[in-house]
Image 1 (cartoon, helix red, strand yellow):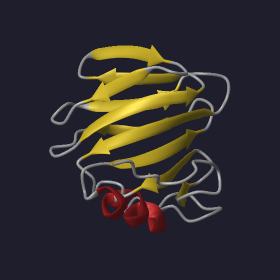
Image 2 (cartoon, rainbow, N blue to C red):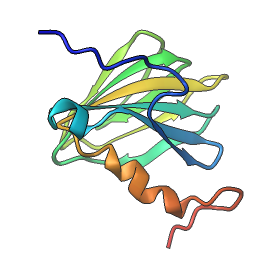
Image 3 (cartoon, one colour):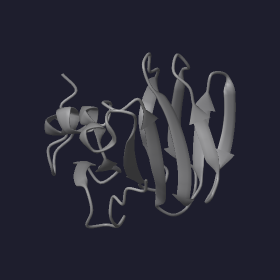
Length: 136
């Protein structure tokens, strides 16, 4: 059986903005996949950090770069990925990523199991438009 979810593009999904540096657009969430996985697209401004160093205890992340050049720190290893490359960030592994190129980076993140995609909506209020983030 084949299930068609629909198109992927700039008008699809729920977009969350974190200032001018980073966005998260949920394309598939837990409800759409039976909680098996979620798909989130990120846009990352030139030379911006995508996330501080962190670790997931429950989720594995698979990142597919679709535009630009993205740097990764995974454990003690630093490496770079470009369009068409896939990066696995397994659970229980410290990691971060940043735009290492001279153009906006775009990437798809497949998160398994689903659920973590809600995190972006939960933290959006701490990044008011036109103001610095509320880190308190």
